[in-house]
Length: 362
Image 1: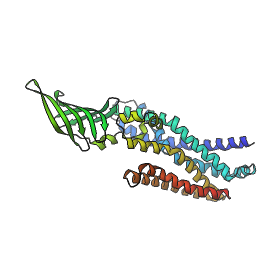
Image 2 (image 1 turned 60 degrees about the horizontal axis):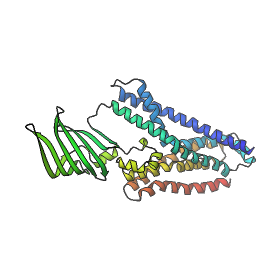
Image 3 (image 1 turned 120 degrees about the vertical axis):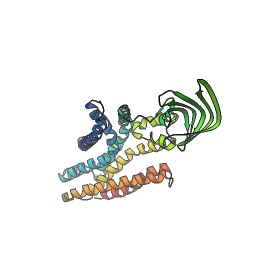
Image 4 (image 1 turned 90 degrees about the vertical axis):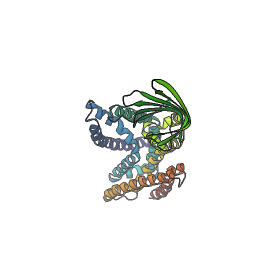
């Protein structure tokens, strides 16, 4: 009998979770589809392209909203079994409030890890395809930046033509082994610049140990300089921020390809922040399930259903604001960055523990 009841709890709980997730997915498709149609309206892309890109992009948004989704699902499930007296039936067969809570919370916690290791790699692949496809249809491609196995590649316009920059071994505000090709407005070769390193903290790049090759009256000439300055539309922060999109790589990528991602130019602190932020997902699912259980089991009155939903929405909004506030304190070095990521978890865990003790006494 216990196995049947255990299966009943899990089946109904995950059924509510799938319904809420599908509802959010449909809303996400409707809202994002307008944006994609606007982007592709002046291109020769098939009408199916915006729909396809929307369908593969929305799952990454769903993962970000999972704590909110699991909270709604948990409240819905708990209110249902409480209102139709199924909760009393479960208690008759030995399922106390704390036991029901543990089943739901640990199921959410386990689901969080499954999503990180199996679903997140798929959604990151989808987002990579999404970004790549949109870049192929982008109308403004005068300026491009990319990282690949060969290092950093930049294409930009400057006053006298076009500039292509390659570099390897990015190191904080410096890029090394810099090669710059400059073409005139007719796309003819103007000059080629070699530099051992370049300081790119600002848009005024300082090149060190420079060799410039250029044509003068049809003769190839070479000029060596210790330092040389060029003006770019990019600085370090602008280049790095272009690749600070955690949706394009997964938790598994960070674990197994951390060194490779550093070699490609990803910032070490950013990767650490991303890995810890992703790692908090199972804990947030556990806590949000706990808060939903505490909220719904606090009273047995059916009239309080709307009150639960309003309070629940306020709680989730406050949690998201506190999460962002804590992360902002970490990014501004007010507190250690890793601590800023885990502080909301620790604070909510303490409050949840108090609530669990209270519902266990009911």
